Length: 296
DNA sequence: CGTGGACCTGACTG
DNA sequence: ACAGTCAGGTCCA
Image 1: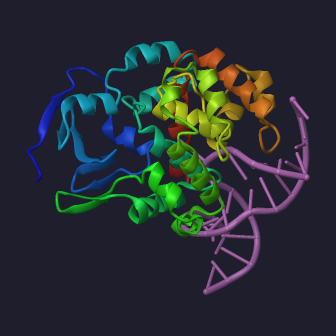
Image 2: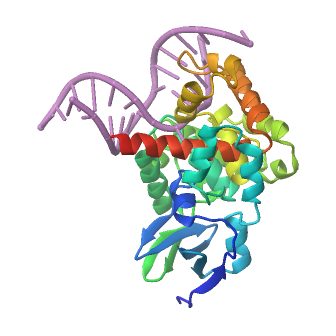
Image 3: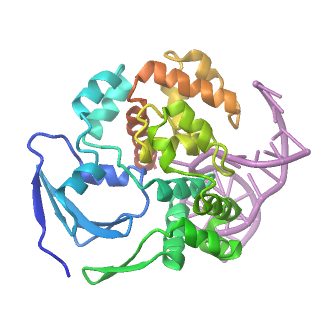
C-alpha cells in the first residue's frame, strides 16, 4: 500500500522537477493532488518538490537520483554550454531542468510514435497503448499502466496498434517490437557504444530517422552530445544561430532536411555547444515552445 | 548524394 | 460549426 513519503534535501543541487517533467522529454507523467505520478518500468511512484526538498514515495532515493540525473553537474554543463546570451537566457529561465534517464524501450517507441504529430496526440496514443497492452498497476487508489513490453507488442495485431491512434506508425512499432523481442536487435548493446556508432545502429530500424535516433540517444542512453533537430529547434537555429553556424543553418532554408543536412547541423551544434549539446537543445526547445504558447 | 511526395490522424485555428 | 492546416519526421521512388 501507499507508504510514507520520504524527503531528499537538494542541498544546493539545482533541480526543478516541474520543468523537468513538463519540458517535453518524457510523456506519461501526470499531476494529481500536488504530486507527480509516473510509471518507470513496472514501477509506479510519486514525487513532488517544495523549494529545496524533493518528496518521493514508493521508490528509493538512489532511483530518484538516477532517474532525474541529479548526478549531472548542471553548473558545469551551464558553464560549458552557454556560449551566447540567447542560450544563457534559456538556462536562467528554466534553471534546474535536467535530462531524465528514461527506459530505452519506452523512449524508442514513444519517439517513433511522435513523428509528425503534435504533443497532445502523442500523449493520447501512448496512454491508449499502455492501457490496451500494458500491465495494470494500482497505487494510491489510482490505476496506472506499465509500458507494454516488446514481446507483447510483437504478438498483438498491427490493427490493434492502429486503434491506439498511432496511424501509419503502427507498422513501424510492430516491426521494431518483433526485432527487439526476437533478439535480432538489442537495445542494451547501444549503451557501451560511442554516440556516432549507436546512431548508425538505431537508424537501421524502420521508423527511426536521424531525429528519433538523437532523441533516444539523448533521453535514454545518456549521449549528451546528441542534438535532436525538430521543427522547433530548427526555428531557433534559424532565428538565433545563423551567425554562429552559418553553413548548417543555411541548410534549414527549405522544407524537410536531408540526412546529410541533418548530420551537418548536428555536427555544427556539437562544435558550438560542446559535449553537452543535448542540454542546450532541451533548454532551447522548451524555451521556444513556451515562448510560442505565451505569445498566443 | 539531393529532392519531392505521401503519409494516419487528431488537435488547433479562423 | 467545420474545412483547412499543422504536427517532436521518415520512407521511398
